[in-house]
Image (cartoon, one colour):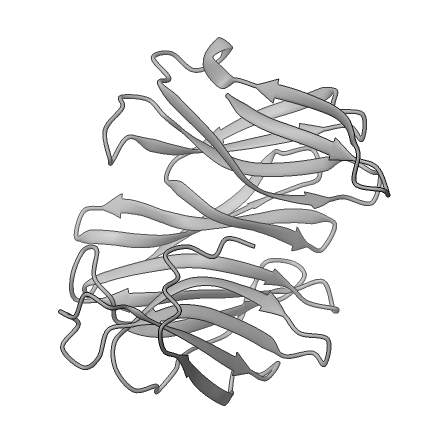
Length: 239
């Protein structure tokens, strides 16, 4: 099951609820919930996934909308495996990856405040592309962060994609950083920039250390600094 806990201002548990998509999706063996965002009316949107066949490529996207007291309002299901969710205009955007005909493709799904899908896009024809994080911006748009690689599950180069509040693409760029990287997550900083957390695998991509790197970019996607934290092993960093 997916589990949600509500804490009061003192950190005490107000309630705990469990959600399961098995009533709507057949042969579901596993569930997870990863991130949550709140809409203007107080509704909480949670993104996660379910596995329909208990295999590594069987994951699908699971979206829940619940009231502030935990009442289930809606469940929605989409193809691909989600890695993040954020506010986009008056609605939401989910990002992740899907198995395409030519390899892994990054996935962007735009939904309205009721959870109805408005559009989707898949990118990555030369090699493999992974969308690993999405950050809401003050103007209602978002910044999507990921990496592209010549290997199906390997490190590569960071990329950024900016969507406006309608979901239209404003710009996209690849960051010219040293070595091969695996994007883990991203967070907006207080000064309007964005922090990218990831792992660095050197120039060959075959090392097993995966040194932790924190990279800061400006609102236009330009790199401001890039720092290595030796000895700090990070395997996941979901915000």
